[in-house]
Every structure is written in structure tokens, then in C-alpha cells.
Amino acid sequence: MAHSPVLSPKPNPPGAGSRITTMNPKAKALAILNHANQPPAPSTATTPGDGGTDLAEQMNDEVRRKFVSGARLGEGTYAVVYSGHYRHDPSRLVAIKKIKLNPEHKDGIAPDAIREIKHLSELSHPNIIQLHAIFSTKEQNISLVLEHLPLGDLEGLWKNQSISYSGADIKSWASMLAQAVWFCHENYVLHRDIKGNNLLIAADGTLKLADFGLARSFADPGRVMTSMVITRFYRPPELLLGCLHYGGTVDVWSMGVVLAELVLREWFLPADTDSQQLLVICDVFGTPTEETWPGVTKLRNAAILGVAKRPQPLSYWRQRFTLLGEDGIDLLRSMLIMDPAKRFSARKVLEHRYWTNAPRPTKKEDLPKQGGGLAKVGEDLKRRAGETDSGRGDKVARKLDFGSMR
Image (tube, rainbow, N blue to C red; front, side, top):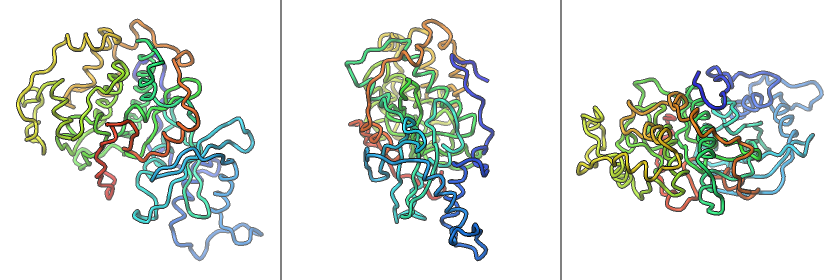
């Protein structure tokens, strides 16, 4: 296991979250979800005296009654978000994300929602948003009961110039992000949309990775995956070049961009088109060649690389990223290596000396906070995967091939 400032829980056994048991309401709800789109069999089980209600409906009602829905917090094209709480304990707040039915999709459920349900039901970690339960309504809408995270997101925090923070604070946030991504990868899940406004902050200061609408399981080495994932500012060069076979280092590149933005308090690699995005990356890291990145010229979009550029010298990094110190700069550059084969894995990120050398990371309860409030909870959770409300960053390709869940 990787050594880190806060010991990560052991990975879940692959597929552990999908086991159906009669004691787990979340697993029951997943069974209901699978059951809901099946034609009823002649021998559907019922309970004596229940008026013909089948077992799945009873299980669904049992889960739904555990929660009380409150005010509407936000609405998008994908979902409506409500405040809520446990019925038996009003102090236990939740966010209820009601997925809208969409006739364009099979069974009326967007693939993003299916991905989110699948992966959040399998991943349990302090730095990943918790899925408490799932239930359906009479209108066949699916509702996800999610952890209440009231302090906004990391992007909103660095944009708020009234909040100041230190290198130790950055180390703490980066550590929590690194542990979340490491845990996903240890459980064979690629997130594929890591960015500041998918990193939500709990009341106690804990950073939580959210929005698994573009996540997928690691593929077999020969299996083709789509390159049109990850919000453009955070998309690694191999995807911009059309790579169809990739692994966890795509998430590590996104982590590196998030870390850079925390330090700079501005966009690190902003661009308006995919081709421009690649040129912006080359301005900083240099144009890749067969010597620096074997095989790069054989990628589908290699023709747009253009004129050769030299990478920025070490002095560029020392001048712009002073808050990270020498160790932090070394880690950042290791996360942002152009060749994915040489880029750090999430495990190597956690093994870097940056985490144990001074300064020590700030305790989560002592981190600077901003009051995102209920409205911000709604804004953060209503978005569809790949959407963002961050100005230029919302110009992201959404032409995704979900047919084969690539």
C-alpha cells in the first residue's frame, strides 16, 4: 500500500459493492433498479396480505420512507436536486438527486446516471462522495440520496479572493484528492472527469471526489475506449491526440492541472478548442517527438501538433509555483509528463517525498472554508458529467459514444 499523510482505507474487492443482500438498502435499491425494467414474471413473489405488491416494490418503499425531501436546490437538464434528511434523525442531512426521465435513452435513464449508480455503489472511501441509497418514485424517476456537502467546491474556493491559503493547505487538499484517485484505480475505476468543481467540500473540511457520470471500469488492454472524455482544460495530450487505449494516468494528468490551479488561482491550461488545447499544452511542455514520446506520431490526431516547441525551463516552474516548494514542483511535473507511459501513476503520486517533507499538510478541520450553502449544493449536483459553470471551461466536447460504455 502507498504511504501517505493519511492512511487510505484498503481497496474494496472488485465488484464488492454489487453483491445483493437483504440487509443493505443500497443494494436492495440496485436490485429494484434492475427489476424495474423487466416484464413481470407470472410467479412474481408477493407477501401474504400485501394486496399484490411485489417484493421489489416493498423494498423500494422501505428505502424511500427513510428520507424526507425538502426544498428544491437546483435543476438542470439532467437532474433536479432537493435538500433532505433521514426521517428518524433530521440532523442527518442529505442531498436527493432526482434523475429526469429522458425518452432518448434506453429505459429513460441517461447512461451518466447508470455509471454514477454503478461506481458509487462500489466505492466507499472518506474522500469520495457517499451514495446513501437509491429509490424510484411512482413516475419511475430514479432518486440518488447523496452525502450533504455544504461548503462548495475547490474551484469556487480558489476563485474566492477573500480566502487566503498556504502551501500546507494546498498539500492537504492535494493529498485528499490523490487518495481518492488512488482508491478508484485500486478498484479498477477510471474517473475521467477530475476538475475543481467536481471536488466538493464537507462540513468538516474533507475533500470529496464527486460526479462519476463519465467513469468506467479499466478495460482490457486491447479494448477500444473513447478519447472524448474529461473536461477540456483537464484533458491529457494523449486523448487530444486521439488515443483509444489508456489507463489511470489520464486521471493523474487532471489531478496535476487541479493542483496547478490551486497554486496559481487561475486556469492553468485554458483553451477554446481541442486543437488549441493541444497547442497550449505544447507551449508549456514542448512538442512531443518520437524520442520523447515513442509512438506519438502514430496517434490519430498527430498532424495537429504543428511547429516544434521547446519545453519551459525549470525556472518557469520555480517562478510560478513557489508555494509548492522544490518537492511539490517535482511531483507536479511528474504528474504532467506528456508521455503517459512515463507519467506517474496514482500510487507513485502517494509515494512521493512531497507528502512527508515540510510543511506538514494542514488538518482538514483547520483548512480555510467558504460557505457554499444549499444553493451551491444544488449547482454542484445537478450538472451532467462533463458540464461546468466555470466560464470558459464549459466549452467541452460532449460527443460521447455511450453505446458500448467506452
